[in-house]
Length: 358
Image (cartoon, rainbow, N blue to C red; front, side, top):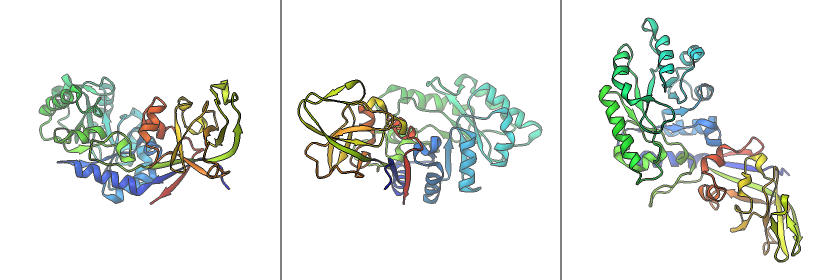
């Protein structure tokens, strides 16, 4: 009997979520962001599933992720590296036909060096402009100058990144869309990309030629009313021990939870060493027998403790309880821990066994 925590990865759900997002788009094509090991779900397995579903555009953060994606998918799809090129990576980009996303003047000079003597990149390159997030991106004011400098090989894509897409009423969304149109005027005919997961839900003004959904593929984020996403994973942990705690006794490190009455508790094999956050102490929950069971006391490195009073028939050694999944919504669990769904899934460590289900 294995007593490890496990994440059952629902590959068919991830494919269905991609199809849902594709159906929402009024124009352009739907890509997929699979950085950070596909948000903790498994880069190779998710990439293969989405490619089989019809996705031809994949986005990762680092070149090594892109190399893994190319090895998994073969020569057909486009693979964009969001963090951009490093001067010593030219051979890697060319051999794997990767598309660098140029984010800064330094990266632009790197790209110019690679294009010397008219030797073009196999799949071209993208330019990322900062339209207000003040993270990565070229200045909008440099658009015309860069357009003139790129006449030898024009970019295949102009992109930016929405800062507030999950807030559909945020004025920042329209501001960034307008700024991208300003950039576009300097690059007539070059396709645009702006929409992340939240941007897809914002409507046609944000879809452009290519969208880049990430967290929504995995069932995260908050879709608008009437839209439904399926969970990309079910995170579960087994019960190791069940015991009675008498009134007045405490549970866990620092004795942060004290029993007001006799309480039946169960200790589960998951903790912050597995990526389940310590900030969920005395706040998070698990599902067992279709009912919510609160976490009692501190989340420790390897263990959590839950209240299973009135569930003695269910709480047995080796029984798995659900922490994320169809009955324990990712974003709700994350909010109780003071974080976001992205952090919960990307933070799951290799101690959590991944089980892939089609």
